[in-house]
Image 1 (cartoon, one colour):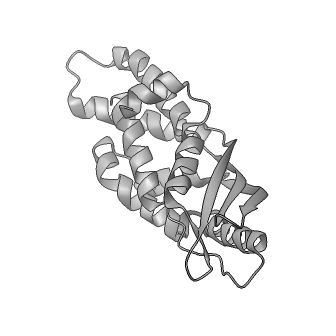
Image 2: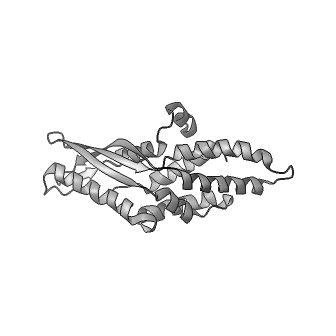
Image 3: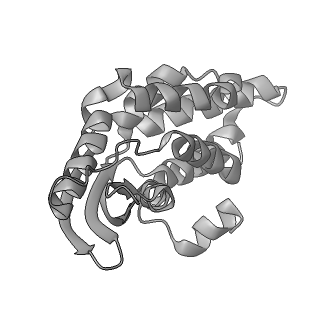
Length: 202
């Protein structure tokens, strides 16, 4: 499996399911309202665990892509979600322009480390396959390495920003592009920017 394919599959699946559906009620003080919205959205991911809506949607979106490698998407998702956490920091509110920016730390297993470890191990271990090994044999080895890699991967905390905009009715609504960027950044972890651009085609 090429690095680009694995990374883009995981990242695309993650971004498809990331959506903050809860607006912050304008009846509260702005900072309190935004913080409450963030808390409700992030806690639904953390405490929903492998049976939560976030995990179930992620599992569904990786199922077809991972099937050929003999990977149980439910088991992969469960392992990926282990250790997920968050911390909401300062929230800066610009009342005049109707914009709020929240500092958030997201703790999650960095996908780029998984990709790199699988790629390097596959290059080595594929050499030990018999000469008559088939594509199915290579796929099975890839699946094994992916599951071993995600199980041993340690979650890491990444500091990101999430933006809220005030709607015409006074509610504070999360800017979904900033939410996607935040989760993509956390998923990339400490990956070298040049490597990320090469893998994502950016």
